[in-house]
Amino acid sequence: RLRANPARGTGMIILDSLTKRYGDFTAVAGIDLEIGEAQIFGLLGPNGAGKTTTLRMIAGILRPDSGRVLVAGHDNVLDPVEARKLLGFVPDRPFVYDKLTGAELLRFSAGLYGLTGPEVETRVDELLELWDLAPWKDQLVESYSHGMRQKLILSSALIHRPRVLVVDEPMVGLDPRSAWLLKDVLRTFAEGGGTALVSTHTLELAESLCDRLAVIDKGKVVASGSIEDLRREARSETAGLEEIFLKITRGATDSEIARVVGD
Ligand code: ATP
Image 1: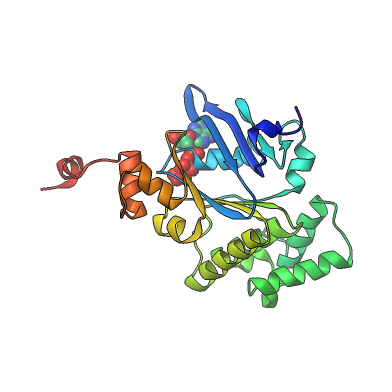
Image 2: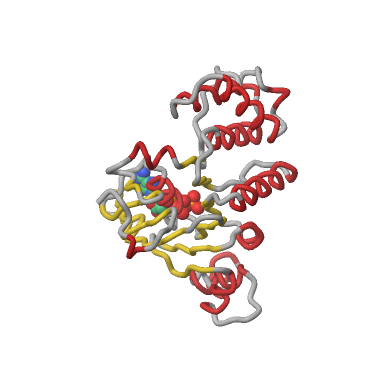
């Protein structure tokens, strides 16, 4: 069962009854999802919905209790080396070796994929240029700001030219220019045939960036499709994503909020 069953489609990322429990608590409760090439796909959901847990299972750093993840047909538990080669992952709270310089960190990441030599140097330079980090190439990461670190981690996730890029909460800590740059990078990545998967609870970001979305709540997909599909789901022709999101995830009503914090 190393390859995707063609009957299940040809998605770059396929989640098949994906499930994760922490003790008695089910954080991800049987997610089925298929994400194709050449698109930015958003995983949207309230706090605690299971977004990070899902992304960590896709990246292969958390093992599902049941179900499976296929990356371009490779089961990431049975065939982890192939699956990881195709994938770049940016966690929400990345760990960075502070005592390396930016360039050293990127060379180290390249080494993890077996990449060495002059091509790596060219790739390191081009990525640092892309994110305006070239002047800090040989500075220790400990002197980088939060946003600079975020951009370095994005560079490290792209170093091996993955076909799938998974980013948990991409915009956190980025200034407007860097946020614009990241959107542009994700768009270019998708236009070049890549599959970008991002998690967010920023509705504006989901609406402006993502081609397709899945809304997850309590570990389950409660709606998926394009914004238009979600509008239909919420039975509204004109609703913005915020209204749709609140309808679908059924958050606290105004009267409930007033009871807790109102006069
Ligand atoms: P947020 O938007 O707040 O980051 P999320 O959608 O990314 O939320 P997860 O981080 O996947 O949500 O967490 C899903 C649920 O699983 C939460 O209820 C969380 O408390 C729980 N959970 C996550 N990690 C663990 C863990 N290591 N041990 C126990 N429970 C956990």
